[in-house]
Image (cartoon, rainbow, N blue to C red):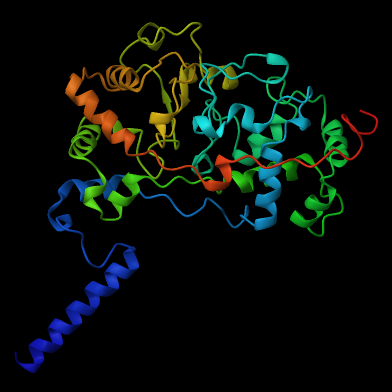
Length: 359
């Protein structure tokens, strides 16, 4: 080869290598990857999960995570000493409680179904109605929520935290603060722990180039998922969790899902007519492990949920084979539980008795 052509070829190879390194995609393709248009289409719609969900403002530091993990599993902060974050977000049930509606302090039934907190810190809002800004905001407000921890006020919460011997850990997690034990820091500690609860799944391996990570049926389901329009709401890193949508664009969700009562969604928060029956689009990560489905837990199985969503949101009646394929694809979104979430920590003895001093 003439020297000038070798020089051009070398420059082309260099730029290919540089582009690959910049994009984060593997330099050497897996077998068949270069001829897999479905993979390239998927990469344009979805992203693999990050290592953690920290931000510059909300870092995942070891001391905060350790504190947050202990607080997450500690029921003694609730009004009756029976409810912790893990009561509704159970490890064995993939961070849900498997009930149509959650049960909080005093055995009160919550208004809506408990969503998973796995990968949830990447959502644009928390709660079905988006009335919490983040996992930290959700955790903080749960302390005095009537249907969650049920404490009468924040002063009671602070007294309990001190009586339970958490003072030193809060000081280490929030150094330099005059009063490190406060509800906002409880929320930040819980949030730091929840931001580590990432569950990479076979679909992530597929997006990174392992075309064998999905079965043939799952790939067929992914193709259907894209072609029928599910990605209009369920795309991105979480396959959802980034927008609001009316439930029932092509029909009455109350009748189709047999909901009782029919929840008016964000309308109950905003009072705006356009927000009737509008909910945050749920993330689909680990969805195969978190029945029952929808905001009211009215549907017991994933195939039925898929059928209803296609009919109500897309105006499409899927065949049984199409439903099976989509369910197989959704199965590929299930990842293993983080090790420090699958086992509960041992709590330390109380510092001043069952309810603390003066409680």
